[in-house]
Image (cartoon, rainbow over all chains, first blue to last red; front, side, top):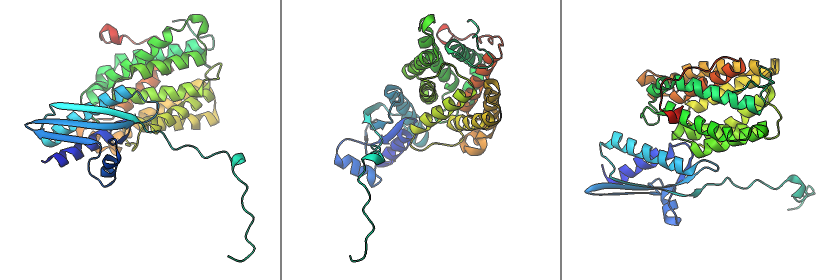
Length: 121
Length: 226
């Protein structure tokens, strides 16, 4: 199993943990990687010893440290289960909180609707 | 623990704390049973212990509130904060979100009756689901949602706290039994969901408090979980 396949397992394991809103790295390249299906936010190095790092964003108001610990447990378990390999060096980084998009302004602050068109283009 | 002056009809702050103490004691008496069910998401046999540690952290924070200040909002805020700070494991993080939502629901309440319990369930359920990208059915989230919906339905006919809480307990138990039909890993292992069972047990403990029943005996766990 190559690094990319292990990366996909890591990514799936991290995403399955309660409180994880996204698995993604910093920077445009890492995020583009996530968009096209490669393991954005996950790095795997297998030069003799298996080293993994995973970057997450957490949902608002969850205990981030505990969520990160749960990610570590899930990643170790699923990599061991699916590959038989033991991760010897694992880093979980909380990049931040994935905030929901801002709510639209109240109707009272919205401009009045345009009058219906009376013909023409 | 002193009895609440509004026991059986509504909880004041002290009564609510007492319900949590009963819930924790009930879970403590069955924690090995819950741990033995733990096969998802990581089968490390600690769901019951994690839930118990989280609830105990909530109680410890609430018990630090001076007796004269034990209003519903104050106790609810302390329970919420304690659970957030002491959350352990996936199940503990989920519980911390449920308690947070419940705390927000009663932030302006003088007591917790059937209507406030329904509101607490609904907000707790909403908070719990808000922190997960893809909810997995057949887990404690499912049980929380089913119990919440049953409480709301029961309250339409009879808004008494005991009636509403009993309905939640009844549906939680039924929902737990359905979890293997929703989650293949449970079905393969021949178990129900551990976190769901933990939720059912916590609700049973709260109901036993409301009914003035004695605390269950400890199962001999270490002092930090007692």
